[in-house]
Image 1 (cartoon, rainbow over the protein chains, first blue to last red):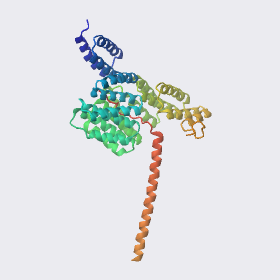
Image 2: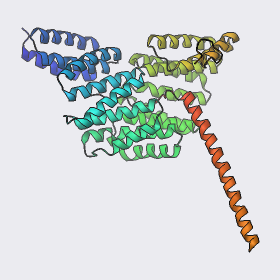
Image 3: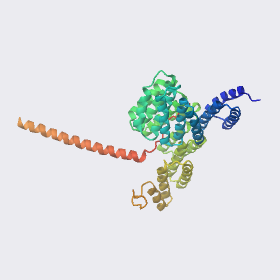
Image 4: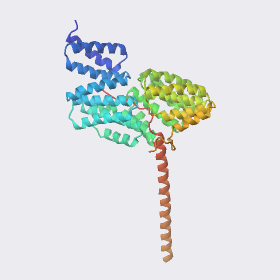
Length: 368
Length: 54
């Protein structure tokens, strides 16, 4: 006989499992049985709590579309109840899901809603949600190349209460993103200073994922400046850290290594690294990463003039983007298609693709 | 004295002209850079941490 006490025990275990989500099947079954029990016993509060947990579970297990659906339902319930704490947290989850699906405009809307609630209302977990919303806004503005907004939110973050433990937890991550931003706007000196100070001052206090990303991004700075020997030295260091890093981040170092090998004209080695990186990226189902590896493989194959292979990867990335309704990278797709088509001698087709990346100025259909 | 005055004025005019040309050039360079930015910077691939939820 399953009792309320058993239910509570299972809920506690489920909360732990949701954070790691290693075995999706077991977690899904546990959800089903607990939901059934909660509904049949008329436990409305617990039913809502299960919905909220499910949002987190879907997000942590890369099921972003499902997470959006469950979050929208849960949002309605918590708005009705005027539970501002949960509403703000769900807005943040919605933002993060749109973010991972590369729908950045929607992501910004939801992060901002979460931030606004925290600023306007006096809720529990205020500091925590505020830091999360600001951090996610910083990441999202990076994606749409709004470095001005990135730096503005970094300043807002720095003005928060520095003694807060959660703040300390985010401090290195924000510093890393700040360094990345300076690198991307070509302020290499400032970026170099920030990476160095992160590595010199705080290696002991930095979590494994962040430390790994610091090396990975520092390597990109060296590559951008053509310092390939230094880059390779840090690649080795980053690879040594691999064991203590989450699956979400590991593929990036393969892409970085492949870039470096490509620059050193070690083409075949670079392509092998990319192929392996792609299988890792596919394992964690991150759209951005999968597309990035596929395009890198396309470019790599074009570089070695293996146009047929490049076309195969192009078809695969095109299908992937169509399935996921991602249009942000269409110009890259058409541009590579044009190059590969010309490479196999289909110049007319290549020109057709070139015309797709620009507006038709003499079209009679869109006179506006 | 008059010659010195004339020389100073000529120098000032020249400085202004050079400064304006510089400013004009800088403006054009910025515009070109901005245009390039708009053309390619719709989306940035970054090796940043993942968004955080709790």
